[in-house]
Amino acid sequence: MPAHPLPLASLRPLVTAKPETLWRTVFEQSHLGIVLIDPATDRIIDLNQRFADLAGRSRDALRGQDWMHLTHPDDLPLEIEHKTQLRQGQIPCFLRDKRYVHPDGSVVWVHVNETRATVAEGEPPCFLAMVEDVTEQRQTRLALRAEREAAARYEQERALRQTQELLQMAERAAGAGAWDWDMRTERLNWSPAMFQLFGLDPQHAPPNFDTWRALVHPDDLPDAELALEESIREHRPFVASYRIVLTSGEVRWIDAYGQVSYDASGEPVHFTGLCIDASLRHHTEAQIRQLNAELESKVEARTAELAQANAALHRLARHDVLTGLPNRLAANERLREELLRMKRSHLPYAVLMIDVDHFKRVNDQHGHAVGDQVLQRVSQCLRGPLRESDFVSRFGGEEFLVLLPHTDEAGACLVAEKLRQAVENAPDPTSGLVTISVGLAMSDPAQDDQDAAVQMADARLYAAKQGGRNRVVHRDPANG
Image (cartoon, rainbow, N blue to C red; front, top):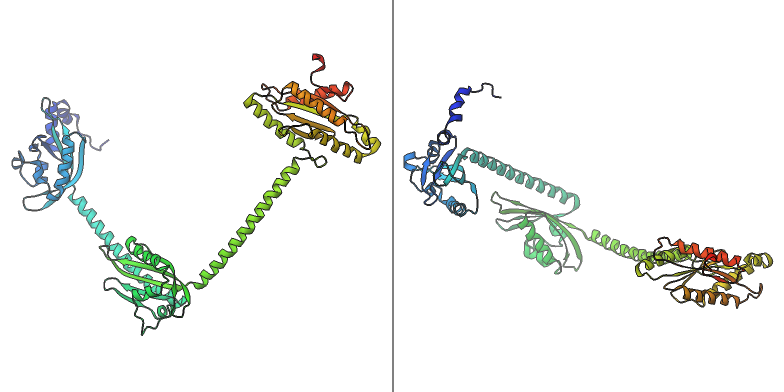
């Protein structure tokens, strides 16, 4: 709350006043200039004293006058454009800074907010302009801008002096050649080290751009000249790398650096820089690139070898060493693939669980070497009757799994019987007759577990063993 609030009685006249009275009070007492303008003729209908002061004329002199004649001629085109947009309803109002010209020629900067309004009941709408004196603000901004520009010029000059000092130090320390181009007089100066770097005699080779162009390698000259032009045009440091060809035929790599300074209007006035013999660096970089290329080639070869080794490891991890068949890991992966394929196609697959009959007896009577020989013979017999799309694996010990994609029960039974006969008809030379028992199960699209059909086939394999071996069981005993 204010320290000394106004008495309520002093506010009551404003609170109880009619809208017209309240508007007139605000109109006359506002610290802003207020003008009412006829939208059809752009002539001033009414104005308060504050606006008359801003315009430098009396209220009577301004009433009925064209609103636009107060505006500075340079600001008038934009004023007319905005007024046209306001009159056509394209914008609700416009705000802008512009200048008023007093009769004595003095200029006042004002901020204008002009909009369409109705200030009295029953009166037609008019344009209402609120005008604020911003001359002092703009003068402050101009003064700040002048200070910033002066500070910037000082920094440029200081940077130029520092650059020149650094160039001289670098030239002495690195044996670099320095150059200085006065862009106002087009005079180019080279240091003695610059002549030495370019293999020239100062008495016979004038330091100018024609001399420089004659030395630069033709393949590098366009890029070097473009770098110079862009440095000047875009106010950025000059950096270039190019070759020069000495009169002796020797080729040198040059690294060039430079900086342009500008006057207050932004015009380039001075260009100073250094040229350094970079032949050793370029030679070293070329050797590094060659070594990198050789290393990349070796890495690619090694990567290919690793890919082949990984492929071999992948195969070894999924194949049985003794029989050469896929192992249980590969079988589980294939079962998962077939389950997903069946879900999409709704075509069932069959699973055969196979066990070598009396295999323990073979190992006990003839030894494990003969047992291994029997397993290899059985695996060969199982491959024969199968299609290329079928899958057979050594599931563990003397147990094998066969997967028959897109096969119905009748077809699966036929294949199972062929496998049984193939093994029976190929006795082992040492152990003699070898037979197998087979449990068969069909997959079901309703199943979500890849092991469901395997477990069912395994149960029927057990039934085949219990039923006398050397047979195929494709139904549960209770179902016949």
